[in-house]
Image (cartoon, rainbow, N blue to C red; front, side, top):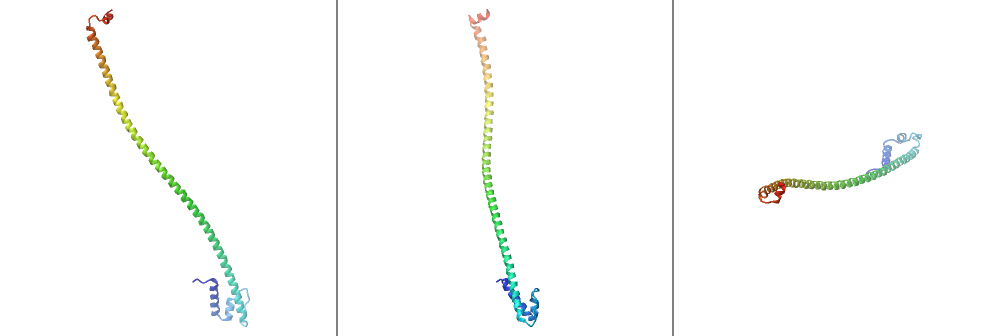
Amino acid sequence: MEKSQTDWLREYMRDRIANYSAVDSVEGILDSRRPPYSAKNPGAAALDLVYQAAEIIGDVDNYAAEKQARAETLAKQAIEKLKIADDRVRSAESVRLTAETEIKELSDRLQEAEKVIEQTASRMAATEAQLSTAEQRAGTAELRANEAEDALKRIEEAIRTQILEKIPGDSRRAGRAA
């Protein structure tokens, strides 16, 4: 168990008085502000020691009270600073959580956008392939149409030259000759 300052002082004073003779103790313990007493009046010296001890105890108590008050003030200030720091930490934690939530939402939206872009790119590739196929078919169809048109022109020409010219009394031919 820890001794109080008052108990310590009492014990110290007892040890000091026990180790010296009455005259030596008076001279060793007396405060320099008080005149030393002679060995003729040891009771007065003892009484003076009691007054000095009481004064020292009072000073120690005052000093302890000042230190206690200062410690309490420092403790209160530290507690206030800790509360402020805790509030800041909580605020920062809240901001961090909000930021993490926003980042998660943005990440999700980005992934969705990437999927849409991939789907769109896939559709564009498919559409381009279909367009290329359609262009090839159109080119083939145009080529066939040109070939069919050329064949039709040859057939018409053959009909004109082979059949119409051989028909006797054709009015068209007479109109041409005239």
